[in-house]
Length: 230
Image (cartoon, rainbow, N blue to C red; front, top):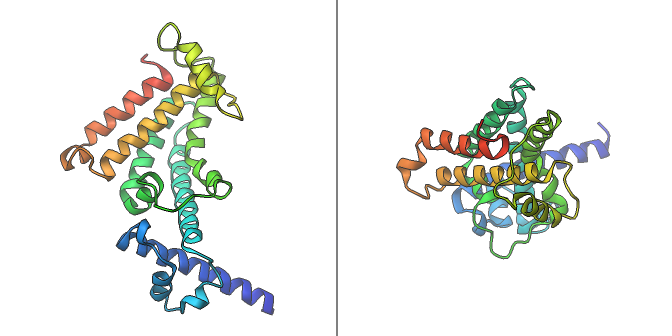
């Protein structure tokens, strides 16, 4: 192997070990207490050596966030992809349960993505947004396929169309979906995140957090936002 090739392989190995150690530290001390020095000790490296690969705690947090978003997105893509394309409601339910299942299996990563902000950390959107939008993009494709059928939710209230158009207008890059469908999809997505937070963080107690029936009903309630009640 050439010297540049060996260096590239070594860098890739360090990067993989860095993520593994970072996840362990995330589980043990939480995102706010994460430190590059602690991760270096976990890896059996001198901090000065690890700082050649990563410059700061914030850079480590960014790597962990991007990695977690990518894992969540890949899992949601897989479970939604197993449902026939014509079964739009089934695709929504699959992705919703996929988000819940991934969160339960990775509670510390979920907390990093959707829990309290880390004090002093400002996520660089150019690095985190592409991965952060991956799971939501699955729902956007369901919405696009729904719009292609000519179906979609009715606006809520006499001024619902106006309110939905105003909500969409704040976006610098307007969506391709009809304003009401886009707005309802956005609300369904945030409702899904909230329902999963009730489970992961046991916001309303363990009994409700462990209630499959409550989550299934939450999925159904948010489904009506996207597809209507029929």
